[in-house]
Amino acid sequence: ITIVEPSGKIVGPAVSEFREVLASQIEASDAPRILINFEHVNMMDSSGLGTLVEARTRASRKEGRIGVVNVGKHIRNLIVLSRIVSLFEHFDSEADGISGLST
Image 1 (spheres, rainbow, N blue to C red):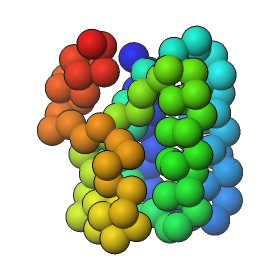
Image 2 (cartoon, rainbow, N blue to C red; image 1 turned 180 degrees about the horizontal axis):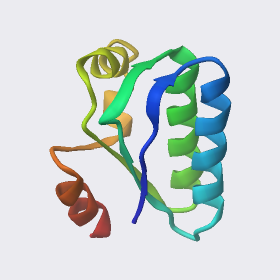
Image 3 (tube, rainbow, N blue to C red; image 1 turned 120 degrees about the vertical axis):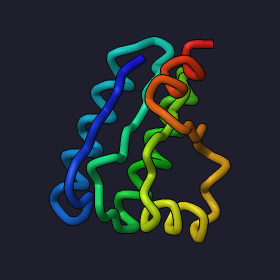
Image 4 (tube, rainbow, N blue to C red; image 1 turned 120 degrees about the horizontal axis):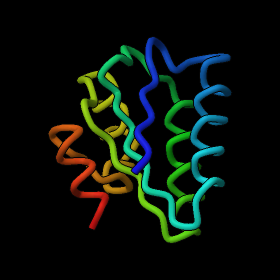
């Protein structure tokens, strides 16, 4: 399990960095298991959401999975309103995410 811990705002130039981090982790494994911990993210825009969807698509092509944890209210609302909530496995804690993605 790879844990990705972005911080701050995932908007503008930060989206490219987020995309590169996720892409490199996906490419590094035959069946990537990535847990994204949003605890320190306070904002994300539609480009950030697009990056999440793209990462999920790339991971699933390799029989991988992506989970999310500590999703704040703002990002949770974006995910729900964009109707992509079912694309990601949601966990209550990092430990739950590690356990859940390990199976």
